[in-house]
Length: 430
Image (cartoon, rainbow, N blue to C red; front, side, top):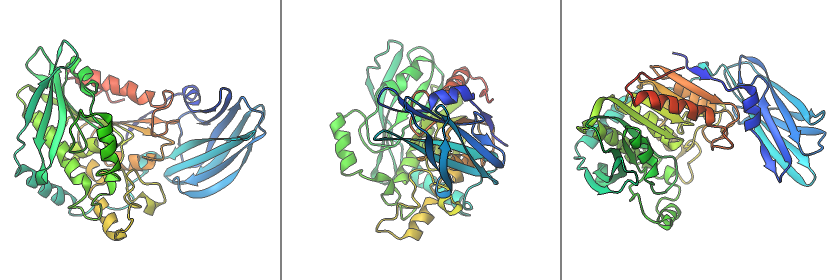
């Protein structure tokens, strides 16, 4: 099933994408057609400079974000110009634009996707992919979850709150927080999983959802307490968890992400076994690394009923072999002092594209057209494996992080989905 693509207007896109230097100098780059989605052939971007008298803008066009296919200078008339390139097969083009304004260099990127619904994973799925993960789930099942709840104050009069700890494989733990409305007996459930980094979990991550009617569980990506002072997490990030994505990444049995993926499964299972779950709605949501975990959870747990994932990481990590940037954590290149072949083989078992084909529930995905951390072709390679309904919100002027509302179109749809799902309605796929 091809994804339905939500396309913000050109006027909105042009306003969203800019880099400001000082108070007046701006460089804007936007797809000429407003969407950034093209058929094979010519693609174009508009360039606009404000607050500086500049005659031209230098540009480099990179196929797949990696291979230079053109370069030159766009002539600017009254601060406006155009860049043109072409791509004759499904894929992604990144254009890097820069201007000289006095002694300053201002840079901005533009993106274009050609026939994204036809982009496929760079390499085949391992034949024993499902067998491997079924074996890991069996290992997890041999460890009792042993959930322990510690009641706390939610800060909202209509919400109950607890900290939670559960046991995981190899003596590790799952640590998180759970909240639900004070009134009522059965609730739709939401699992919230976290973006990359090492940090605590503020109560606000879940209490807002709970006040709207959700039974919400939010878990730390790491085996760490959730409410220590900031310095604790800074120390962990600088020491034990420094470069954590690469820990054990040369073996599918030792990857740091094995514990993380299984913690997501156990968290979903815990929600599904609670007597206050309504037995109907079980949503998983997150962004970046949280988007990765959302796909993985739905790919492993059959009771997930919807996925809401913004700029998901971990997609098509062998994209390099197809001439395109892979998704974070880019294990293809994380091979320092390790056997490259072993690292790249292990990555196949953690790649989102290989979990996606097991997902049959509705999925909402946000994808940034100038995101070089979780590049759009890898995200589409994953989305094109999904078996159920899907809505892909293409953000034509969005980098990986939110800037000046560039991710707004995704969050508008996120809110629409959440409002429908909490009432037990079908996902409002556009």
